[in-house]
Image (cartoon, rainbow, N blue to C red; front, side):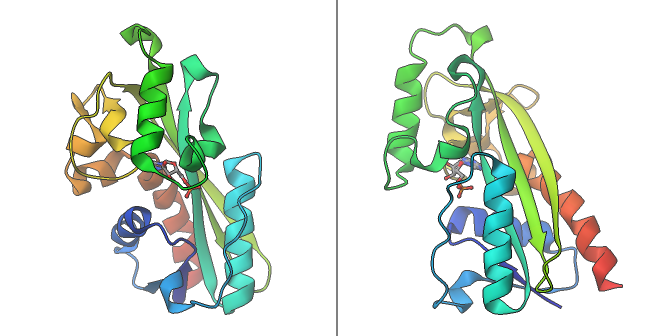
Length: 197
Ligand code: IMP
């Protein structure tokens, strides 16, 4: 079985490939299908966007497709940036600008009010039309300055109290044990392994 990852984000692809390694399947990314147009992520929920992406890629490639939609929910901002995480500071998906905007909006906000979580929904779509979803959440706090060089997106600002580190200070293998994407992927792996038998 071949699985097409419906993403072009190199940071995400790296993590997804590592998380799918235990499955004995060929995992490829959209790089192998350059003709497939970008799916517009206009859903109001992570589930809507993940399902839309996975369905579009399964239909266009004729292969099983896996898409994730994820983002950061900050309690002080009533759940923003949420589904708009990638474009928080503008359309060009600029991680540094997104982090600066988040720090600016939380300037002066005390530590105990800086609670946040990453949420991830993974959708697995089959060419015949069936779609399955799985969700994962990772709780943390928004740091008052960026720390660490690893990871991508909001990782330098996402502090995990149990580790005393931001996601960007964790080794990729450590992040891949506790992250929202890891939790959703573990559930999705179960769905996929049932279809491998
Ligand atoms: P999308 O799922 O590609 O629409 O974008 C999700 C956005 O949420 C990313 O561009 C990041 O800004 C943010 N995000 C999702 N997961 C992570 C993560 O594991 N670390 C840091 N940022 C993340």
